[in-house]
Every structure is written in structure tokens, then in C-alpha cells.
Length: 144
Image (cartoon, rainbow, N blue to C red; front, side, top):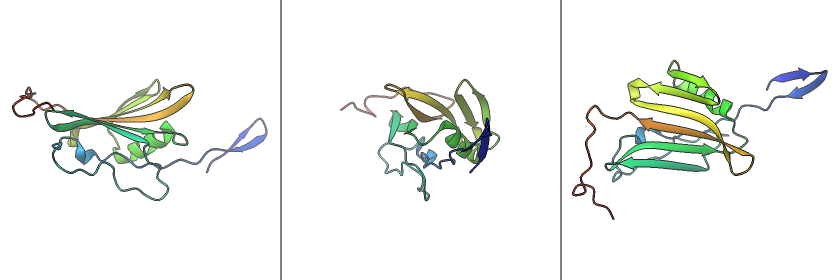
């Protein structure tokens, strides 16, 4: 915990909140295969309150994990910085992006408003497209 003194008043800064992250091994996996959506939860980790996945051609290509307060963007950024050290390519205007080239995905971190004044932290993971992007065939992936 960090002690901050402001105008002679001592205030305690909120301790960093650890978070349970999306399991990036899911990216690129077929939707017909059983998956483990989140990494193992550590003691005190805040769970995402919702996780969205994006699917194309029968594979998971992206996901977004959303966290409510007390989780802050700075908390998640600290975890991502440690995990993907040296991969951050941009940070500014409330958005940070990591390009994890060895694992072939990128991560975007942003705070956004949900409804009124409620801010949520959104972490979006996107799998890099393969060199040859092929159209899906309805015969291979029929619509239900």
C-alpha cells in the first residue's frame, strides 16, 4: 500500500487489485473442442463479470473480458505488463495495446462507461489473421 500526502492530509492509495485473466490458449481453437475459458484463479483475484468470445470459421478468434470496480485499468495493466513484458506498442488516451508476436495475438486494454457513470475495464484479445484468410464454406460450417 502506498501512502500519499496531499495538502497536509495523509491518504492511503487503494491497493492494486489482482485479476483472473482470459486463457489465451483458447484463441485459434475449434469451437467443437472443450476449452478452459479463464486461467486458474489466484487468491484474491477478481473474476471478470462477463466474457465475450468471437468466432469465425468454427474457431475462436477473439475475446473480451470485462471487470467492474474495484478493478482499475492500472491494475490490469500491471498484470499485462508483467506477463507480456516488452510487448506494449502503444499507450495513451486511456487505451493500451500489447502485440504478442510470439503467441500471434494482441491485447487491448481500455476503460469504458457502462450505462451512467459506471466505468468498467475491458480487456480484448485478438488472434492474428493467418497469411491466407479463407472464406468459410456453409457446407463445412452450416448455419443453425
